[in-house]
Image (cartoon, rainbow, N blue to C red; front, top):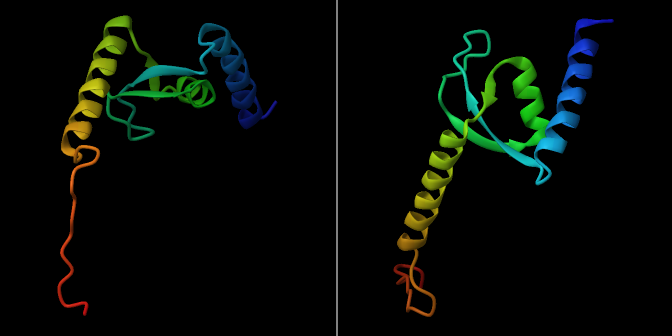
Length: 102
């Protein structure tokens, strides 16, 4: 079996495993330092199980711990709140003056 085919088989197996563990279809991973793939360690991300399987098989990421998942969700929640607070309120007058377009 070729190396590429072997990796594809491992990825498909990991996808099946992750689908049973994460029926929502998404899971949180954390990157690991990997010079071969030029990845930095400690960066969380939420991805579909198909992407997660590839990252896990390649060795660029690992499954996040419960503590890391909680911290990631809190960070995402704070970022969404920050974005919401920067937007003008619904129904507020938001007017851009056009100059030089007469």
